[in-house]
Image (cartoon, rainbow, N blue to C red; front, side, top):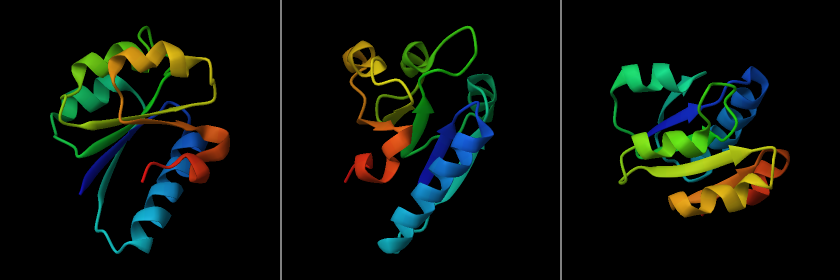
Length: 110
């Protein structure tokens, strides 16, 4: 299963990566994990993913909510954020789920 993390914080990338590896290891699911610190690098990769963990606030000109439109509709997009107020702003993009960075394991989608 191919999964990508797009986040501009190295600390948060490590946390998300650890969470993904722990959770998928429990179910013995083999994953291929790619990490991007910005959306431009993700677009240059031109790969397809089963799921993308996308930070809403990337520190770029655009945020994760705007960038969701550039991701294939078949890809499960899971927003990750420190700002719960973004949940309502991002809901109209039909994400698969939201994860709050401060409670990742309890928010992980089934």
